[in-house]
Amino acid sequence: MSSDNQWSADQDESQLSRLIRKSRDAPFVPIGIAGFVTVGSYGLYRLKYRRDQKMSIHLIHVRVAAQGFVVGAVTLGVLYSMYKDYIRPRFFSVTKK
Image (cartoon, rainbow, N blue to C red; front, side):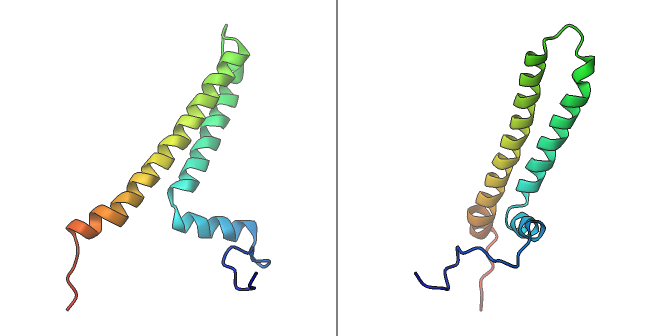
């Protein structure tokens, strides 16, 4: 294998710089992560106020809500990517002279 492989890990790149670089490529990923953490935290906060609801049912509802937020963010990211790659160049193309 050659040493100029683009898939090799960079030894100098930290986890934070990698997350920042990836979030520039796909801006909906950090939105999905933040939404997942927010919904999960709120669900755990509301755990003691669940009244007569079973804990397992409450945790299932929290998990479904958090996953729904992540799926929604990924769907918006895919739709934005499709718009950016296919629709915008087709309708708003600028002719180069």
